[in-house]
Length: 305
Image 1 (cartoon, one colour):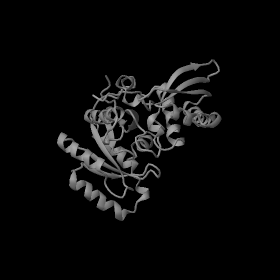
Image 2: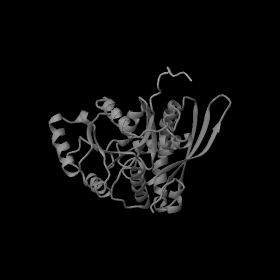
Image 3: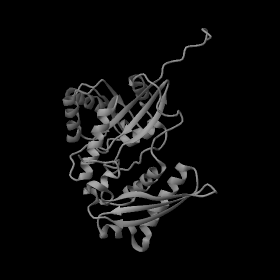
Image 4: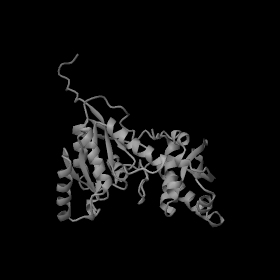
């Protein structure tokens, strides 16, 4: 053995749970930290329904970012399962990052409840204020003081996923906090999300962007067929499930116009993400009260108990 060989720097690897109230900017931040679109994003709250893993390298550290559903007061079994998922991921993580949209007028009740539960669990956490590009510095400092009065954070960061301000400092902080250990994924892997699920999420994103009011919350998407061809293209057939026949009519639109628009936008995004020609086929089916159907939710890896 050559004693003059340079020493290999020890590697680090660990999970960082991004938690917060709905619309705190968790999915947008995840995509910015990873440098690729891993999680779907929409202006509507509660877009993320299950755990999404993003993988990034910072120096000798592999950081496994876990985007979690927003934490709020649940009403349906789906809501309960989403919140349960968020707390489970936070409990299993090496580092917990509490996110809050700095542009909000005040700290919401859901955020205060999160800090109270972290205090009860005696968990440490890092505070990340998002969307600082929409706020003047004069408003940020009082907000930071207010939050740190209620909970003693290990560190506080102010970031903008749009401009990139504060992201490099945040990455270095997470890299320093994850424990020593071997990397769990190849260095070029960005997520563990299967392509079938990614495709379903992309279409669901369009439901949130194109449909109004409560309808996106009453719908879900499942990839039922994935057929690859020799020319490299892929045919994806997906079922959009809603809870009532009246909702099905809205998704279809007059003369099928709405579902064609949803399909066209989803197909364009999937073509970009997958780097191949995508043939997307959508159809709509009705399953009454699916969001309160425990067995159906468990097929998605969600449990309310």
